[in-house]
Length: 603
Image 1 (cartoon, rainbow, N blue to C red):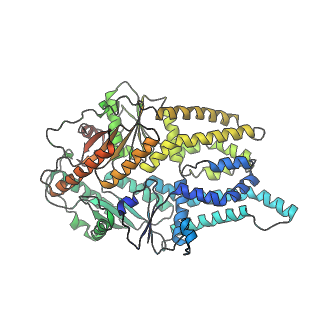
Image 2 (image 1 turned 180 degrees about the vertical axis):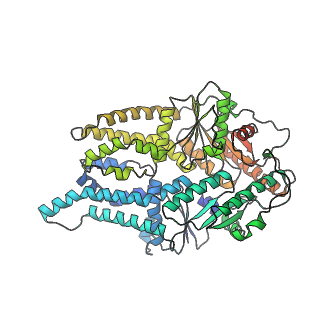
Image 3 (image 1 turned 90 degrees about the vertical axis):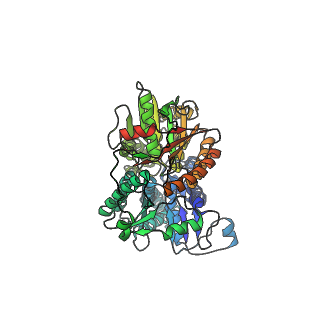
């Protein structure tokens, strides 16, 4: 069996532990490295195709092929997985040394990136097909000249590469849609925001004819006796699970994973999870409705007498910042924290313009506010596809003049390729920084948040190459408006890079949980942010069980969190620690977020 992670912020080996079972191979896919190997193997053929069909010479093509490609994680991921899953077995010392050995596996399990980027990953075969078609058209004139003048009709390396790329894309698309070969198991949490995200994802997968036979609901509380917090959480979860049974699970299997006091790690812990799964038939008896009347307000696990923050915006980590990024591992509550923080900043500075911006393609900001945005705050969920299409005409004209394939660029541009969220997230921050006094950015989960922060460097490389091409081919390409846009963009990117590295103006707050996997990923995130020269003044440890009382479950959870918090303090070093209390239900709507943000604790 093979298990592959496509999330650029891998945590697969964290979950499996150091000892992977002998019959299981675990791979954390490094898609950029895989793409670099592919380019190295096919550079000559790709260069031939581009040289035959464009005005570019070899030096220009080499420069383009060396550029980093946003979204390459998604584009290469599926093809590499398909190669691992379906390649014929072969071995050998040389292959082992180059890590190019492939095996045929009976079962391949794919641990995907979070929702928005997984949905983009599934468009990869379509994008590859369009790219192959464009390359094929670029090659057409060269084939005709070769056949007419040299009377050579056998395929060249460029023809073979184009045919191979098209074949791979068709093969991957076929495997994805085959119910005999592939099925998706969608994992969610028994929370309103997670269920809304799941509904959107299942609808998108249905449009792509991808079958999802099972929904797995993780971290479901079982009854371990009366508790003011757990009772309220079980009540909410029971209502959500009944709703799943009526709607999303009507034609699908629903599997419940009971919540654990400590995060399962290693083969033994994961085996225990596997044996505890509960199928749909046991739903009603497993989650009985807790006794007692419904509470009007949320129950918060907060010890009496503790000193709380009435205004998180007063913290040194936030006070003077003009641009605040909020990020961390998927599922730790980044969006709710970002909403509470932005609300606190807006209330503390009534005369300033404050923007709360989401760059995650699976948006949930409006869900946090229950669709009612407070008047003191602007909230924007970036629609990257709409923004991309608004800029198509200029790019299409440039492509047409460089290639002569009039109108063909639209086929590729209409796809909104992977990486577009990060690109337009960066452009939106670039534009908004002049319109707002303060911006709070709710980022995508770790891997794609880092890609957003690296985008200015990537974009500037592209701008420099494009400006050089426009200057070199000014007799062929007439695009003065595009050249002017590139100059303005280069200046703006430079300003943004300066702002990113300004430790007084820009901060990155890492949100995590007091659990092993989020802690390990947070440590890696902080290391990457340090290399990117971002200020990271505080870690927000979200949803802590601060007052366990006599509840057995809460006591066990609180003890685990105490141990993990000690480890987080070592990771934090000089950084501040902010703890937020577990709330039941999770804060939703303006009043609930306002109450919850006043209960934060700064250590």
